Amino acid sequence: MAIVRTRAQWLLLAAGLIFLVTLGLYASGEWMNWLIMVGIYAVATLGMHIMTGLCGQFSMGQSAFMALGAYTTAYLTTRYGVSPWITLPLSGLVAGLGGLVFGIPALRIKGFYLVLTTIAAQFVIMWAIRQQSWLGETYGIQGIPKVMIGGLAVSGFTREGWWLTLAIVVIMLFIAKNIQRTTTGRKFVAVRDNDLAAEVMGINLFRTKLLAFFIGCFFAGIAGWLWAHCLRTITPDLFTFQLSLWFLGMIIVGGMGSTSGAVMGAVAIMLVDKAGPSLSNVVREAFPSLKYQVSSGLTLILFAVVVIFFLLIEPKGLYHRLERIKLYYRLNPFAY
Amino acid sequence: MGDVLAQGLLVGGVYALIALGFILVFKSSGVLNLAHGQVIAILSYFLYQIVAVWGLPAWLGILLVILFGAFLAFLIERLAVRPLLGQPFLSVMMMTLMLSMLLKGVGLVVWGADSFTLPFTPRGQWTIGFADGIHVNVVPAAAISFVAGMVIFLLLMLLFRYTKVGLSMRVVAADHEVAQSLGIRVKRVFSISWAISGAFAAVCGVLVGMVFTVTPIMGDVILGKGLPVLLLGGLTSIPGAVVGGLIIGLAEAMGSYYASDLKEIVPWIVMLVILLIRPYGLFGEKRIERI
Image (tube, rainbow over all chains, first blue to last red; front, top):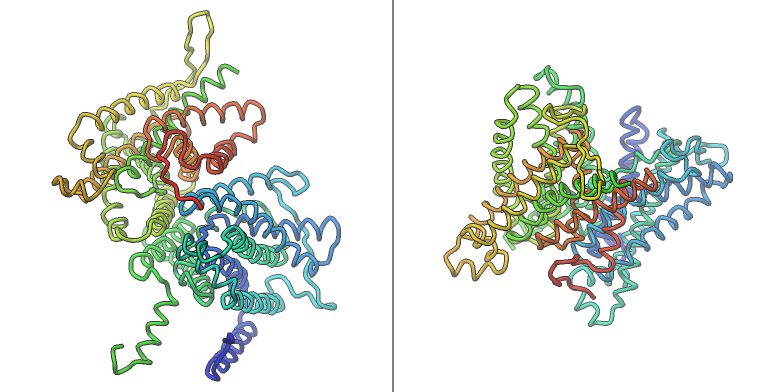
């Protein structure tokens, strides 16, 4: 069962790629910025999808693992002059290993105790990073070099940066979809649905859960690598608990068990993030007595309202809604 | 050193009170209300608004905030938690996480990013003298909070043991079907326990606002102190919360005495250790599934 099966799917894939390339050619300024951030967060959300959506291991520490990846590449490229292409797999690896460390308790505790462990992981990792003087303490690392192909700089919030981001997102999406359709992916789903039954069937729970953590955090590390090279200066304040909550919101809104859902969720939440400041301008004109912090507060409120709406009305996310619409058209005029 | 330890012990009382709010809701409706920290923060801000901006007297402000807290928690239970009644536990927890973001956003919009101190915060230092001429200096706000916390803890024990409301909450916590067969309206007990937890949050808001200041990140800080205490004591045990609060308060004080940057991380490390060794806490029930 291939990933792209029918001719219609090939055509859609080609159309999608053409659309994204055209977006890159015509976007500029803050929309280009936004597109690249969507790409970065989409990769991290794909990691969340594998860990949480496929395998059911809730992780509230995704942004800390992104930080691990980002700091790895930042440190290696600035202190030792290693090429960014070599640090790409390395930052994924370091983040994955960090995920392994916090995944080891996943064997003994389940459900919301694991959530609490990963929340603790988020704070402990960021505190540990903040203490190290060789990681720049609270000032972070500056002067991260751009990623070069030949003489062309392909990172940063520019058009070339979009090509790199797009390439990485497509490759990681391909990897995620591939993982889903192999034995490993089916093991993940079995563990999510009923891990006692999975163990009885002969699936090694220890190895499967650890692998889910490793892969999910590997994706987060790659996303961190991309972010570090686009921003070129990273500080510990970029990787907050709120960002981890955003990733959770992205998979809730997009749909927890599907890769397309993860990407859709990332796009939807980033749209909300974009709408926040514009909405806050409207609000500030209506209520001139409000303080200046309206923009960030309003973004939080909007994000929370959107996710709560999805939790109450459509808990399976946008992807499920899309599938239902497709089903309707396929079955029309019959009901089932 | 003695001062630091005494301060830690007293602050631990406040932490225990925060954890009690979590336990109340968890014991009766089985929901871990991760928005509790943010509710406390919003109520603290609201108290500041009432007392400092609108100039009402302190006792009236506290009373109003308690009523408002109960009402807010009741609203949360009705609108956000009850629709998710049959769903897996993690959906409800995600809902409470999103609610906490909503409340944080509201706080930012209405009150901005400034920090405030509550105007009735006592100043100076008090000295507590023990028998052999040993004195410890403590911050009076912490001492008041500790005493208030112990009084509330006693009231809560009385509530659970001797009143009809408390008894019905315990029955609902044990088994919903048995409770229904006894004629107890389970959904009403849910609402009542959330409302009481909201009133608790208001009291915590007053005390936390006195001991620490009212800041925009206060909700996350409170959650960060309340969760370790909750896990250390056990999710369903009220004495456990008090013991856990005192232990974490002491540990935090000792940590800050040896290295100033250890202060924020000690509760989280204690929580990690507890989760690895004994996830149900010191006094909790052994109801964790493990494979």
